[in-house]
Length: 75
Image (cartoon, rainbow, N blue to C red):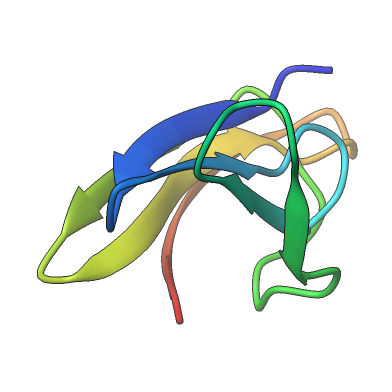
């Protein structure tokens, strides 16, 4: 589903995509769930970036026929 991915702390991170979970992998094969309930609401097609030693989630489709203009960071 329309998740976003970003490299941070020498790992590949996958965020959202219909949920508010965060997954990471150091090899792209084995994945670990960092959280299954991050602070943002479930969404897809968001943008994710690394800045200031945090992972940021920007906007996305929020499932109530609206696109979000919110910004969140994790952790």
